[in-house]
Image (tube, rainbow, N blue to C red; front, side, top):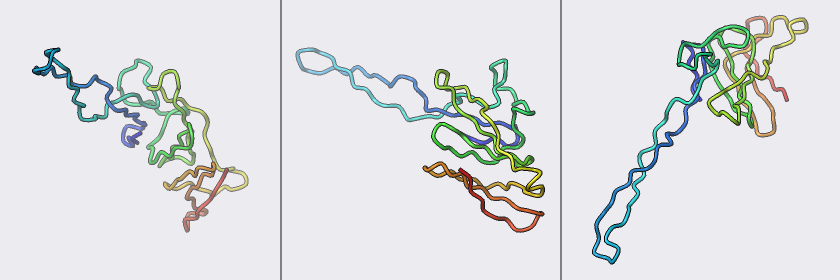
Length: 151
């Protein structure tokens, strides 16, 4: 996964699945020929994006409630992907469609409680542990950056 901040999207890249190169070589044995399969160099190719363009083309991603606004970082936990944004106070949660792996879909978003913590502002740092804890950097009242954890 690659964060494309300027185009407000997440790109999904996969390894190229083209068949390997086959070379027929002549020998002196009774069969006459045999095949040698040489692996090609692995290559990354475009496989999808979020938000997905309705036309299926690689057009610039859409912004809005279910879109992204300058994504900064993506972190994986099991089959969920957490995306932090530069211009908003939310963490967007995405997942991959297991039937069509080129399709990333919106699951939900995480926001601080604005009535309880009105000055709580997410920063660009984010990490997920194998136990399901999500660590994020935040600041309150625009001062020092702190580290918070949620499960």
